[in-house]
Image (tube, rainbow, N blue to C red):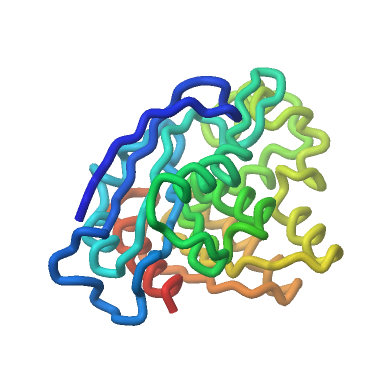
Length: 261
């Protein structure tokens, strides 16, 4: 199991940035599953609000899981951007995780360039980022893993003042733009699904999981109900758990079992 930190200049972010990489290429025992040979699958794994590129390494068993299932995992540095494009600031986080980071890691490491072997996932804010960018760049990603997703679009749409989930509305205006138009925009996972279906585009499979004590359970259930109504390919899992690493550490294991089939 190799581990690397990569610092490089990102054109979409217009600055230097960092990502962590877990690379199962030197596993002396070889892959557990013989069908998973190199070039290997890759998972682009996003952190939550206030988190960074080290969170998954510090708080979860992702290194062991990557080795066990022969998956390369790439964890980018982030800001509290919900992995959206900020054109005014010149930081295109959506394009970064959905396009540039994938292309860069494919050039750098011996990973598969096939859509079926390319996945995106995340927790909380990163779960939203995985849904939004996994759908927007659905020709790149075949699977989306969304854990305790902060599908905040449901809660902030149309808001003009006050706060949502402890954050002032002006923060969400800065990140999402005009809150009167959030739903029905390319920041809205429901809109992106409708757009992809109407154009006949490829549809990534979605895996969603949320704890029954999580404060985001209602928005996860709302999006699940939308997926059911649209007959969209997905798996939805609920179980005991809160918005914490104890839950996410269990959930990511189950999600990877789902992803590898």
